[in-house]
Image 1 (cartoon, rainbow, N blue to C red):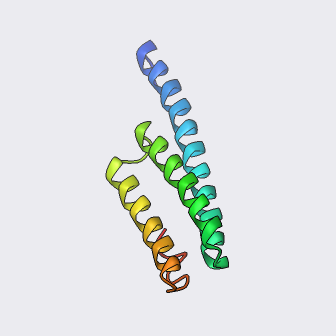
Image 2 (spheres, one colour; image 1 turned 90 degrees about the vertical axis):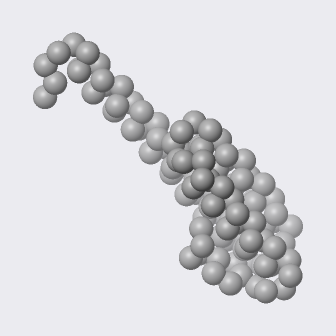
Amino acid sequence: MAHSISAKKRVRQNARRRARNRARKEVLKDVIKTFNVAITGGDVAKAETELRTATRRISKVAAKGTIHKNTAARKRSRLARQVNALKAGGGAKGATANA
């Protein structure tokens, strides 16, 4: 256990930040799950709407530093590829594995 005042404060800050980051990641997972449901359903319009929502959320989480910017870019790219494949008539190939 921390003994100094600054170490105790650091423990409190870390706990708050961890809770905040976990909440952001949970929201991210939920958004990606709804996107995957739209992709597997085959509805292009809904998939595009969910892509915009997911992209916006991923960017915000990356901007806050919860996930790395390159990780966010990779996730956005993979989601966009799935929508493009759905538009091209390729179906929902790899809908859950790539996100």
